[in-house]
Length: 610
Image (cartoon, rainbow, N blue to C red; front, side, top):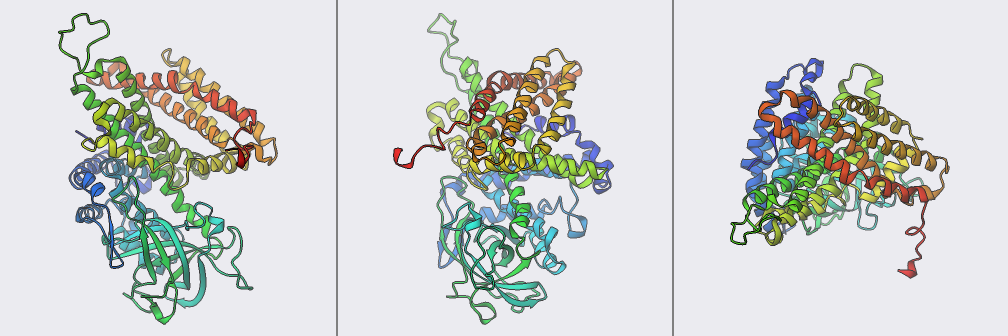
């Protein structure tokens, strides 16, 4: 069976998002609907032939640490190499860097296949592309030449090194030190020492080199690290020193101290890295891992957000596709599994019917459809904003796209992570007792997806980002821009009698979101405004996906008259939209009631009373 519905993907790209118009812009002029279709066909085939085939094997045979080196099964190396050789790693990058300048929305649709097939293997090229994009944006010409090209060719792979054992997500508390060590052809050189935890792709045998992007602090004049985030800088720290350094080919002082054994994503190595141990590797004769400063000193966190935000959206895409694949698997199972009889059946000797005939199974399938297709649509919309940010006709349009993307990033990461996981839970339920056995993929899909509400920023951290940084600190400016976009969809839906009720329901939800946000703004920095940030994120995310579903429903309704053989597809879209508005949108009011009350039921709970 397919990894995702191509009919759905074509609908989202070419009917809803009107991606065929993008080649009218100079950056994408070499492309057309034909090249987009070819990329999607290639992606589907490569994902099925190279990624899906070792999905369960990589889960059984985890990476191992042996003699200081990490080994993974050879199928992962072959898959990542095939992905790079197909040009997909470089595809969205500038032609000057060896890329094809493929629109980001099409590249995201391409990557959706690989996330659905094998999210753990897909993590390697995902992280590498984000690493290369950061260096291309902020690195020096010599750094770009040394590190970006080899990554886009797949010869080097990339990571991001933020967290530390004692600090976790609190990056202000990192203690990795970076001491100036002169300058060479690659820029201002430093020696780094410290430990980095939870590093996906931190070591492996998949590539010639691994390019780590590392956050660290340089000591001040008194030799102490500057407290907080202002002292954080960003460094390129490769596993092996590259050409252009004073010791090309030398092993850098980066050591794998251990592997983390995860409940899912087992094919993605996850490492504790020690920098500057000085035990086995002392490049250039001194202790400390060699790293080169990216951008200005002290600007590290701001630069790293370039990669973090890309990774967050990619995590959302992975979560959406895990939910999507679970939905398709449970749909196929429900159509084939005979069990029970209709409620009105009188003859106990009558043959059992496929379980898809039972109302509660239909409910679970429809919920999965609403979550999975809604999540994929959200991620493709965000990718379309990246294209607008790069190529919109006016500076005002580009700024508007950037503001919308910034506001939606915590939602794009969190909503699919939470509700894609809910879809996986329902997929197991549809399978019944078979669902929690390892013979069926839905068990592994659930375990893989359970990581997504945590890594690249937990749901709670995303909630603080959305409400604290993107709404309250911004005083609702980006919120107002998004509200205008929602209003356009509402106005378009008003003319369709079948959608008019949904339009009013959506407008009411967004109006209340705005009123609650304004009340919180007026608290003027009172910490109570953030006590129930996660409830606000839940409400906001549902309102965003409600808007996404109404947009899809409007397009589907307009196409019904001439649908022909596609009538069932469009009616499925309309039914999923109706499900979301009848089952899911009413939850928004309850979440906002909690936020508006400023309840301290959780925040005020004394430690000793738990």
